[in-house]
Length: 261
Image 1: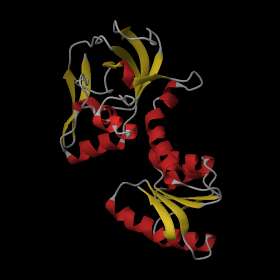
Image 2 (image 1 turned 30 degrees about the vertical axis):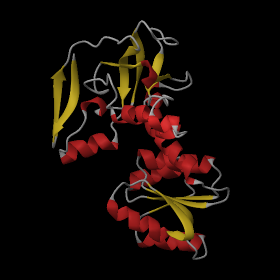
Image 3 (image 1 turned 45 degrees about the horizontal axis):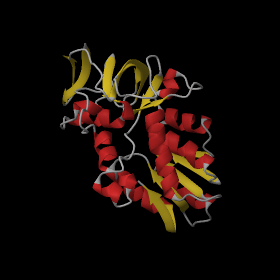
């Protein structure tokens, strides 16, 4: 079996691996779709060392083998990739900080015990059963493959403290930005403004429910001032992921406002 791995700057190689088998507490999943994350793109463009276990970490597939100790999953179940739940035993968990569980954190990095030697850019992958969640039947495979990035934006909005009626700005209309924009609307923001240089992405943001879409720079500055009577946005979500965008996010927020990175 071959899996695609990013092995250097501009280098994507098909590497041969043995057919995966499940650990006693694991499953093998036949991958249907795997998304390309921004971290995959960054690793490909930068050439910085990249853990093979997370080279392709936005996938959906069907369970094809189940370990002897696994309960609640069986062959044929459609699942999406997940992060292991809090273990309840590590130092952070014992200190009441289950949201900082070491086991969960290591699984997010692909550094947990028994992590696979490759990611989801492969026909099959073996992972711990705690690393998968059954996919909702209402979701297509294409939609289910986007659960992981969708939960990233959901987590950001939930933690941000956005309030009913807020004027919210979302910088960047890539997958994370578009997801954030939709969650912000669902959370009750009164006005949602998306700042994006690409016309195609601006159009998509408008289709998905943004109240206003605008190019960055002076057009964005002027629109936010107009809509807030010169005060600035209540909250700004920075979804570009580049250093230059952090200052613009600060500039668009009002005094006493919030910024979510």
